[in-house]
Image (cartoon, rainbow, N blue to C red; front, side, top):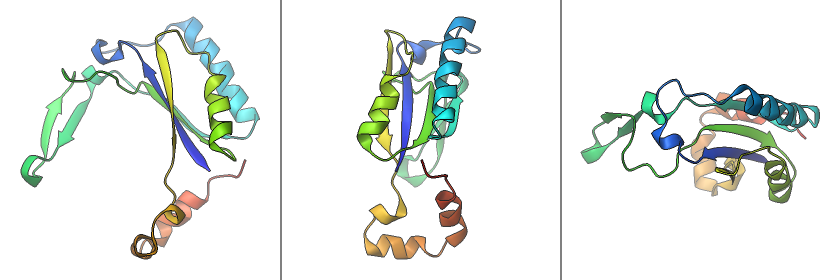
Length: 142
């Protein structure tokens, strides 16, 4: 089972362009990342620039509309993520609980939808794209 652990740092929705965590926080996080890697559960990870450097594309009336960040209505934003592969939701929560997050940070644990999780008609529609399915299936087992 794949899970995405989403880091939601409080106040990041208002962070100025170029805002990055300090060296001490990065060092702590790198030790955590190393533990994920050594356990063989880490598939991918990245930190994200603040929303002030991003954009949102919405589709009012079915037409794309681009809004540059920051986003006034944002209450929580993702600051980074880990993609892990573990045997259960409980194991994903255990890994999230080990993160050296700060007092104002939250980690949201979300299971990735696999093709097998969809009804047969959706699986059939996805079968038309075997290269994409094979790429997703190449994720290493825990």
